[in-house]
Image (cartoon, rainbow, N blue to C red; front, side):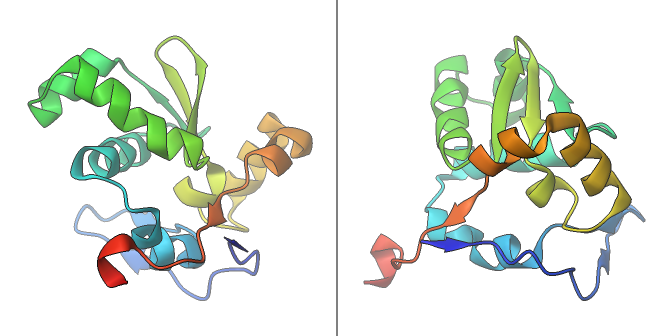
Length: 139
């Protein structure tokens, strides 16, 4: 397994909404290695896009099911893989922490504040490790 590069991102991209994207480039370049299903990636993308300044997403599985036009059971399963890979984790009911390395990108002010709030010990346990082996379709 590889660990995401902790070096400062070289540059950020401007999106159609005018918001700057600072997602860790190493994670972004290798997210395909996680083999997320369509729903798993959609859940992760929605949570990431709708995080607050602390990198937290507030919402319910039924809200995600409505957005994705699927069952709440499908959403429940879809949350499992990004959570197992430490992209996001449940804090309390209806509140998820999106990994600051994914949500903000390394070295940004929001990233530093989020890490300080979460704590180094927790973040050391929640580091996202990039799978080294190729995806099943690439073998």
